[in-house]
Image 1 (cartoon, rainbow, N blue to C red):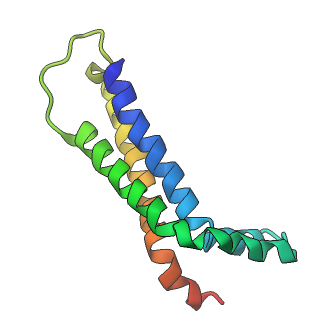
Image 2 (image 1 turned 135 degrees about the vertical axis):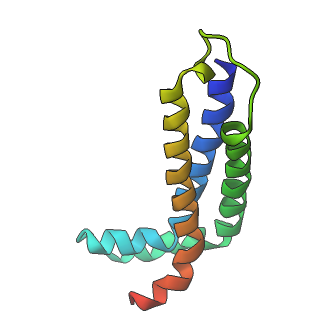
Image 3 (image 1 turned 90 degrees about the horizontal axis):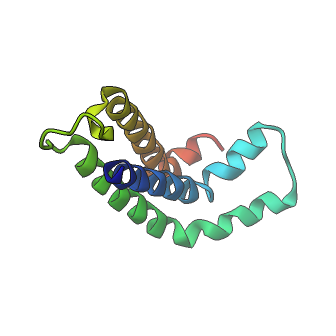
Length: 116
């Protein structure tokens, strides 16, 4: 069970940080595309100064998640979570989804001017 928490924690932290990092730039665009409008959408850019902090936290969390998921391990006992290949595959899929979210958060401010 401890391996499950040691992998899941960094994945959740990385995903949360990636979403928070993209809130300032991606959030208003998504809301406008969905048809939500209003002057309050401009207030979402208040998170822009914290974007580097969120991206740094996401990259650190991804580093620890990568180390926990892809590092070779000693043999697991049959009752442990790491012995189940479905769980390991699910962690890898979630890891790559979070990595794509972090990549979008990193690249979106540079791609954003192409949409406006």
